[in-house]
Image (cartoon, rainbow, N blue to C red; front, side, top):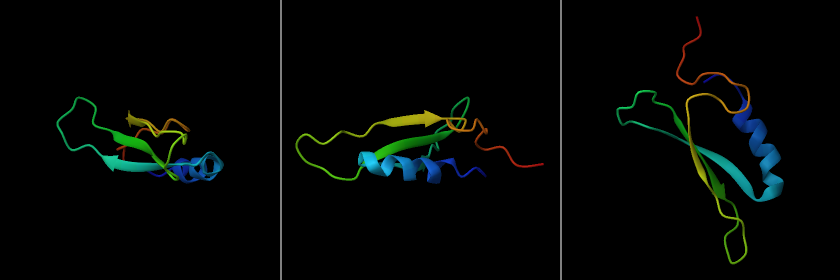
Length: 70
C-alpha cells in the first residue's frame, strides 16, 4: 500500500473522537484484503462507538491493496 490516505483521514477523524486502525486478514479468501476498523479514543457512557470494515481497495483514493508497483 503506497497511498497516505489513512494518515490524512485520521487527521480529519481526530475531531470526532475516532481514528482508523489496520489489521491484515490471513484466512483463505477469494479477495484477501485489509480490515480497517475505527478505534474509540474516549470511552464512557454516551460516547460514539467504533465500527470495522473489510477492504480490498483504499476507500479514499481507490488504489488496490496488495498490488505491487511495476
